[in-house]
Amino acid sequence: MARILYELAAEDDARFSPYCWRTRFALAHKRLDAEMRGLGFLEIPQAVGAPHRTVPILDDDGHVVSDSWAIALYLEDKYPGASLWNFGQQALGLYRALDVWANQVLVPAIVPLAVLDIHSRIRPADRAYFRESREKRLGMALEQAAGADPATRVDAVRKLLAPVRDTLVRQQWLGGSSPDYADYIVAGTLQWPRVICRTPLLSPEDPVAQWFERCLDLFDGLGRRMPAAPIAATSAGA
Amino acid sequence: MARILYELAAEDDARFSPYCWRTRFALAHKRLDAEMRGLGFLEIPQAVGAPHRTVPILDDDGHVVSDSWAIALYLEDKYPGASLWNFGQQALGLYRALDVWANQVLVPAIVPLAVLDIHSRIRPADRAYFRESREKRLGMALEQAAGADPATRVDAVRKLLAPVRDTLVRQQWLGGSSPDYADYIVAGTLQWPRVICRTPLLSPEDPVAQWFERCLDLFDGLGRRMPAAPIAATSAGA
Image (tube, rainbow over all chains, first blue to last red; front, side, top):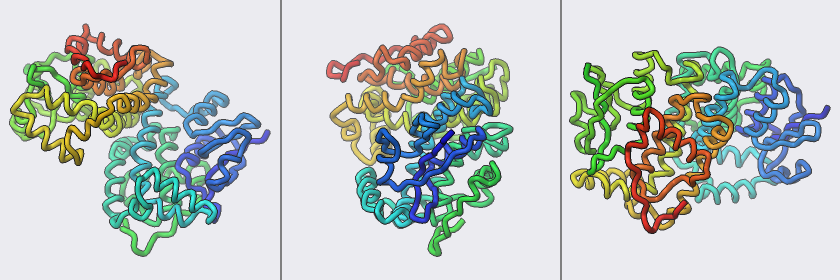
């Protein structure tokens, strides 16, 4: 049985994709082993038989699924033990709302804090592609998107996390009394700046930070084993 | 026992606020009567004792709560019968994710389709305030925000509704086998363009449109009794 998860890899092989981390946590939740194979941006289209534009791509013994949400649905269907949805199948639309909120609101708010760090950490061969594709998407130079004031951007992200924070003041996990895919969506997203951003995003006394530490401890420290980015000397601080 | 819901009212007294409709549905779900009192934009700060900037404002026999989400939490706490959360209290964070997704993604995508219709439908006394505050928020003239191509904007909103659609292909309600606050969040948001926009948003064969019709039938046609906006002759059509 060969199971391979294709992930984005930095020059030093760090794994930082917010979507790949959701899948890593989902696989661990299901107690499924996989080889975690790192790819540069330019290698993604050639990674498996049919061309894919994005990672994660899961090759489950020849059955290929891409997109973290589609992979979560596939895993739940194929391996029904240890459900990813603590609130049941009918609540799937609410999990998906959290997923698209993370993709459409949280990720874009973190992008300005991350783009220059990503650019300098990825493989040299990927940098021209990354710059060109992201500048086209952002409609401006990476340096302009990053802007001059990380503190304001950090503040904005912390404010956006309010709905998550409200829940974590009341309960240990977004999934309730035990973690589930809701936790992996947000923790996977936050693992991205943890691994790549030299500007710290969460203040240690934030309930979100404390929950994130619990997430990093899950599955024998799966998330924590990936080293955090060094803090920039000029960073906004905590 | 006096219970008053303060809502935004158009010149012809139509009620169109996406947030007020969430509360209307929540009150009906709890079988709670209320006087629905219409306000112009300029009347909101003076409506109740303490100044509020936005509606809905609920005055529940002297206890005043504003903000649709805060009102939902208050109603559930004060009137625990007929829960607003079919998936339980621990799933509240997921409902909130849907709520903030509607506020931060869905509402802004509908705004360009709605601004000029709102401007022409509200009380004449409110128009200067509406134009000035919205143009400041949007960073451009209302006419510029509305743009020239409603069909493209309609398309974008329909695409954004994909996560809602995916759920409604599988089940009757976002809340599962019976409607709950998840349905009221999205239906309340869609009631806004239904009442105010002269460009139709949903295509009749869309599962979202069919579910929205079911929502309009709830509570003896509570939503349907509010007339839909007339369709503009130049509209993008279905």
